[in-house]
Length: 137
Length: 415
Ligand SMILES: Cc1cc2nc3c(=O)[nH]c(=O)nc-3n(C[C@H](O)[C@H](O)[C@H](O)COP(=O)(O)OP(=O)(O)OC[C@H]3O[C@@H](n4cnc5c(N)ncnc54)[C@H](O)[C@@H]3O)c2cc1C
Image (tube, rainbow over all chains, first blue to last red; front, top):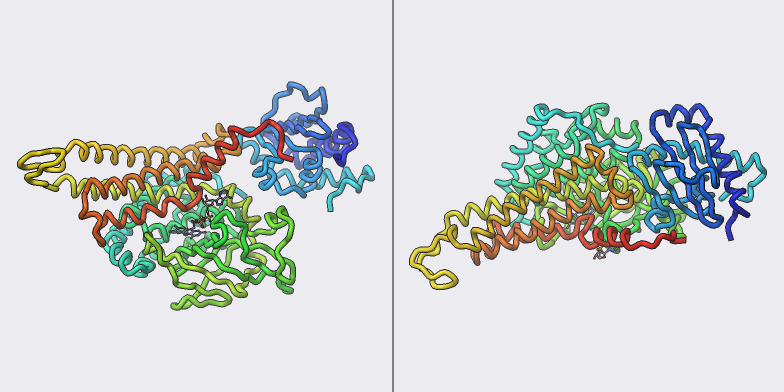
């Protein structure tokens, strides 16, 4: 049983946090010229998002179909909820195949310095939406 | 931060560094046999090694070093190993640990510790413990102190270079105030830290909260002085925290596997050199065996000609896979590999070089003949020393496991 009711909730909170992040000047500056387009694929509930940092847009569900990406990240929605709060041990999750990361390493590394800011954005979104129940202690 | 692999130091500017390696290699060659017999670290090498400042070769320019890259460091390690692999394996710990630490430290830490390495100081890295070597999550405990920092308690069983080092980098698991390890596996992984700290012990190996148990006694690599390190209240300040250990180690494991590969590449050059020296001159005289003739030189015997040719091919294979892997990192070719296979693909250089070199050391024993089996000959020593290649990370078995698992994994995630 996932912490999310359905895909729409995922798009609202995780997608919402990314939508805020991609138009934040500090992320725009940090991702300029990187070509970083992340395809985030989640299971249970199944959902798919494109986070296009340079294009400053987030596409969800059918709108993300067939859109090219440079880094692909796959995990369960529960792990995604933990991960974007900075609460999932990524190295361990990769080693145990709970997370799959594909793409060029040089591009995937560009995601690393962005993560603390994304964690903040996601936590702020959950708080603003009154969804403290999704916050992992 | 991550330490980028790039070309900064020109070939011409690298030349004097290689000359330093050649000088040290000569010294190691001269005294290597003595320290193999005495079964101790080669103490007279400490002063010339530190004074040469060769340990600073890889420090980036922005932190005060010449900015030598992983290929250039590999070349100096192999050159020294050609002189004596056991002595060089000890100093190799410095190159490994400086690489791993620098790839994971903050700019502030790199500036401070890099500056000290530029001054000639050496780093060692006893990570492995009794229970499960390098892959075991540290049982060494780091107990948080009221004023900040940690006191360490535990034992590291493979402490190469401990008698010459000035700086330690290692791992320990952060506990609660009572010293209890985290119970959940995930918490245990997250609580395992990589740290860096001052290292100071007296002649007997005693320091503040730390002790070297000088108990190294093994089949080969005698001159490494790979001792057991006991921690009993060793203090690590908060500023010594580098990163979560496994994340740091796995993102920069090239410094371990390619530096070990460099050791065994140098050893393979030495096996070939020594084999040629003996086999080009040895005369069997009148024999009645596979060859029956009145005056036989081994240099004319088919399997010996082929054997030496095979050795030379293996040395060249070693050079190619090692240098090409270093270049793959420097030129960004690693981008073409699946992300999960970065560690084993880099490790392939080490496992291939190790397999070639252990094979060569054994083959040399057989081609040279029974005299090579006698204690004190270079061949029996190379044979013993080459066996160490099986152990250092990544070992061949685990490399195949990583790759095989990746190829056979199901589409579904493992939740
Ligand atoms: C000369 C020499 C010097 C050394 N110096 C140092 C040093 O300075 N610092 C340092 O940290 N280490 C050092 N080492 C230790 C070396 O890295 C260890 O040999 C290594 O950590 C492996 O541990 P182990 O040999 O105890 O084997 P173990 O880890 O006990 O392995 C036993 C078996 O289990 C398998 N295995 C272990 N873990 C896993 C896993 N996670 N998954 C699947 N299979 C596994 C192994 O492949 C092996 O077959 C040195 C070794 C030598 C020979």
